[in-house]
Image 1 (tube, rainbow, N blue to C red):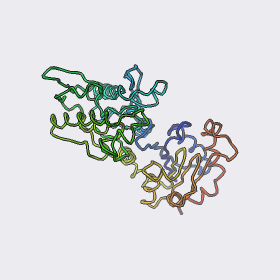
Image 2 (cartoon, one colour):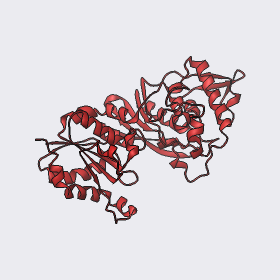
Image 3 (cartoon, rainbow, N blue to C red):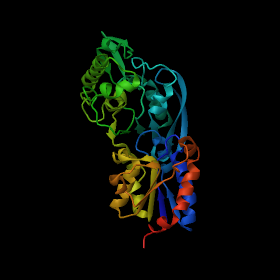
Image 4 (cartoon, rainbow, N blue to C red):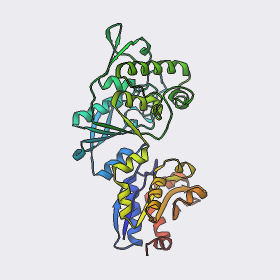
Length: 370
């Protein structure tokens, strides 16, 4: 029997590879002699780099980069040498969590660190980039990243290094040569750069944005400069407004192509073929609920299993009572005991995963293909 372990992280408790290890410990007792294919997954957000590095047999590289408010950080990224591919998360350099100890300052927050991360990948020899763009602290449209990648601005014919605050004074952009053969961007939102559904109005408030018009003017001017310099204008494309406009920035300044996060990750790790070769698929994340149906990894895995006629088990800390969710799985297991405090359950997630598998051995054996 071949079992595919394709779980996402249990956020705040256990990363994907350790979730798989805990599941395997229990399943090896339930199915003695089973073969395991461990394939951590992610949907393009936090944890994508770790899951992809594990699934593709990559390694880690480390570099220095500034956070959204300009402080130096040690940042790591994934490296798959055989493919000359770097796997990045913008949140590792420009994430909101990194500056949670400081007052919000969206007028000064910059994606420069994400550009530095891309430059470090280029220096290592990367020809292909996969980058997840969830969790940003910025609303600069990728301006800081553009500067770090070598794009140059002018004011009245002279070189000019703009910040978001001074951007309106720039009157020309001189693009840098393309840096990568491929830039794939994991993005699960369809917002444009500007307008009522744009980066500023939808996602800005959580980053401290209050004066919407101030940001809209600057992002529109950045888009105008990029369009005049490159002849392309992605401001209205779905996902341009993701991560404070970094979706736009990656398309305009790095030749990026936006793809739904789970689809991108699944394609890169050959998930469909691995599902087809398995007899049982096991997936999960910290919580399974109605939101999981909107492009989240475990439901994506379950749908692939359904398409191949394979039984699928979903495991989570907590599971919402949802008929639509139950319909995606052959069996669902919630591992948190009702009386256990959440903080304790999060500390004991690995133990609870293994215990849940053991406790439900009869139901699991019933999933074994005839």
